[in-house]
Image 1 (tube, rainbow, N blue to C red):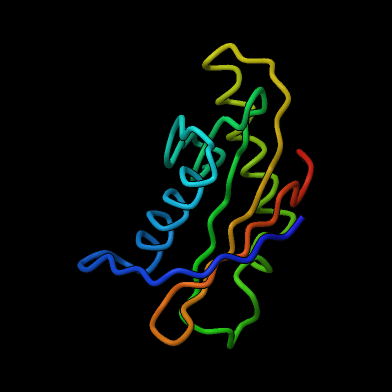
Image 2 (image 1 turned 90 degrees about the vertical axis):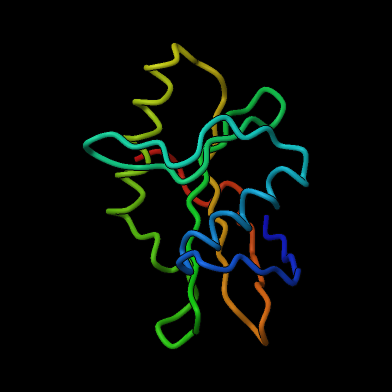
Length: 128
């Protein structure tokens, strides 16, 4: 399921990636999800956002690009990246002793005419 979101936003003094993650977090919260953790890191991987959507834990990868010269941001979430996110997700579930349903989403953000355009891809991939 793909949801396109348009909103003008300004986060001065942050890198493009950090601004994209802050923007994605706002979108997630506006959609009613509860953010449990941001930038959860383990030696074998990282998850940008971990949120709860009802009874489901959602692991969200955020990709932000200034241009489309190298394709859409979500195209950078290849198999190797998916594996790293899956490893981090497993570590998160184990650390907090959770066994709920979970899903993996990607929020793809690009700059267009001075504002961010986000595409939220729900169930973007399965755990690897």
